[in-house]
Image 1 (cartoon, rainbow, N blue to C red):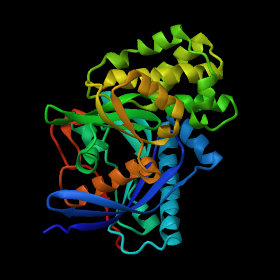
Image 2 (cartoon, rainbow, N blue to C red; image 1 turned 90 degrees about the horizontal axis):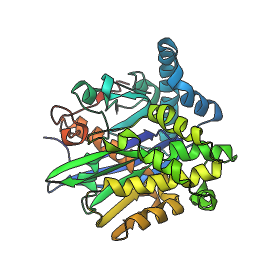
Image 3 (spheres, rainbow, N blue to C red; image 1 turned 90 degrees about the vertical axis):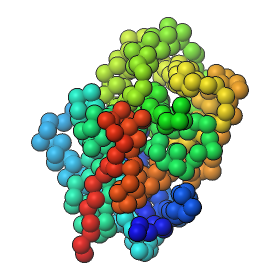
Length: 357
């Protein structure tokens, strides 16, 4: 008989490179439903060196990438161990870690999240559940997005669950199946242009709001072929590097006009992605702090109620849900939905590295 309460540390590093999210979560399974409560949580920013190395990792040769994986696994394990010690977390059932995505090419049957090597259990001296995407790709799936099963189990009161991180993704119920897909790049592009203004990010979208919308660039962005593809579909940093930024560079926008135009693009594509433009839209991720982006979304979705939750849920929802994915893996229950990823079947994904200390 599986137990009904779990003490978990969820760990997430997103493509926007904001840092490592760590969230202590207490899960309870009762009367067929999962509930959760947050304990301590924090986002630990990357050093300039790690930020640069992760940003440049896409271009590494295989042996260099293998070395980076070893070093990042050690680094991530030490960060987790330090967090556990600092906050005196006792009797954890597991650390459930996403790792950091470097390559995501499901069309080629390949995805790589570093920081998921078996040694991580020794570094943080805990049982670790991780590497959730690879098995889905092996089953013919996109390996993403994985969060929607958590949306269904923990946030079923919302019509849509939208996350605004390095990329945006949405999940919702459609003909009694959970549907989810990546919509567009978000902070991977916005932060690129904010950096040209000497900022890590455009706080509140204030600089974007000062810019001028460039109609020809906006039209060209909306004509990128990804947006016409049916779901399931997902995006990686390769899309930004190979498609989006080269296209924007051809129009040579000022950073402030690039921010304005791409913000409009995100808002428009979000509205286009939702089959019914009514209901309750839960918005989480760092982009939920971009007030100008949310204003532009509301303009395209006048009959939708946009809901931004408390700061802890907003910032740590993905760490929370990867914690749940880990719990489901420990229970050997389905934690990936084929309706979302396009895999051959629903399945239980992730690797478990027991701590034998």
